[in-house]
Length: 368
Ligand code: AMP
Image 1 (cartoon, protein in one colour):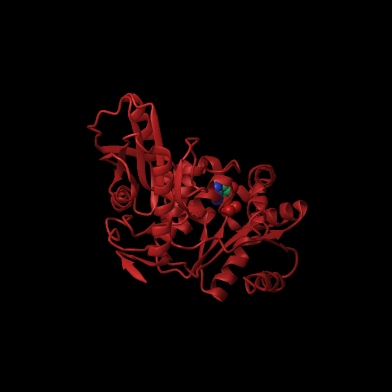
Image 2 (tube, protein in one colour):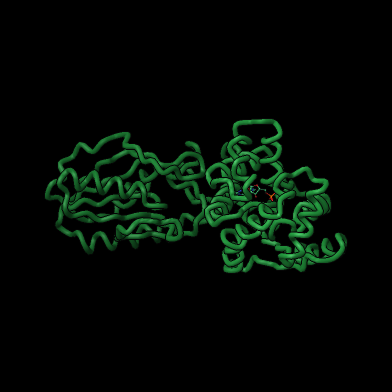
């Protein structure tokens, strides 16, 4: 295991496997580009080792140059790609081979190809040591791929985490984390808050209720509270961007947590995607969605009853309650599908005594 800054990494791909992958890429290049006098362009900083290994294995006349772009900050890709060192070489009429250490979303490749085409390059090929098919979002064909990897953050063999790790001779991945992260799911009034209070004690987890965080902000008249209030009062969802940023900040406040109970989040697919990314950057994932299933009319009665004492304006008005339930079915219930596809959905009957329901939830959680 190696520690780079605040994160721990464990071995993932051996030097030998990397060597075999580079042999394969180089064999393809030798076969396709014999006597074409290609111009290799290495993408700095990450590709410097791969570029040198490919060059050593290329048997014909060739040239090499480098460009420097940046799209990574920490372990999450940012969308902007900046050109830091430009391309000085003449590329008109030449066969150019881009050498990448890793193709992730494809943003860097897209920008590079645009740059090349603008400079008059008509024939280009792309060779990469690592490729993440699940993360790739572009149509551009990657001609030579060393190793396909799942959507994980890796370091070593030229790749870094905040500047460190490039000198590792094999590739490491973020240490998988044994956090338990539960998405507590169900329509408004299903009893998520009540059960979360019990489960967080029982399993030593941090409970984050986005509804509670919004209400805290409304009470304290923060900017976020003012913004959220207009939506909450009508029983509508607060926009994703606002909610996601808030959730990320709440998770960040609990660096040492053994796991989380997410209550009221995610409520949209965009939120579910962002939660996956956030946990993945910690080497963790959603363990399960446990859903409390309760009949609509029971929900309305429960919420009206709760409204007598909760002080929540969105509990006091039957129209708003019915809208919250409708929003749940229109916008949120699709998440059942999202987690079902990953075999992570567990429905639990949410009608009965509190202890009885806790039992039902625990029997799911204990098996995870
Ligand atoms: P809750 O306490 O979970 O019933 O949430 C109360 C209200 O806060 C909801 O009706 C929404 O207006 C807002 N809210 C809570 N969580 C979210 C979320 N994940 N996305 C959007 N809006 C939310």
